[in-house]
Length: 103
Image 1: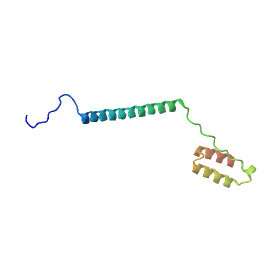
Image 2: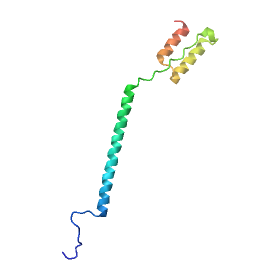
Image 3: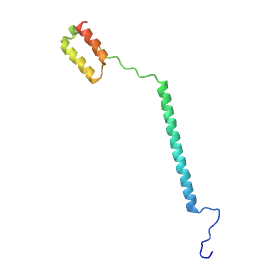
Image 4: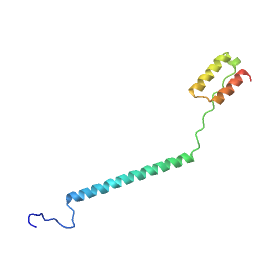
């Protein structure tokens, strides 16, 4: 075996050791990142189960037509605007409309 470099059997060189270390470190980082993400998801899920759903504030009650001096049409327009903005539901709009009309 003339002209062939002599290699040490069973030992890695400096570059081989550095490459192996980089692979091990990269794998450890990836695994720890996934574990942390999974723990965060579990904690968020547990917190959501423990907390009661947020209660919505009651819808504003329209004032009777006689007390404000506004016409019924003006108040119905305001109620329609509140419904369009999403501040009151269709059921709340219908109930307020019946109160205004005296039905």
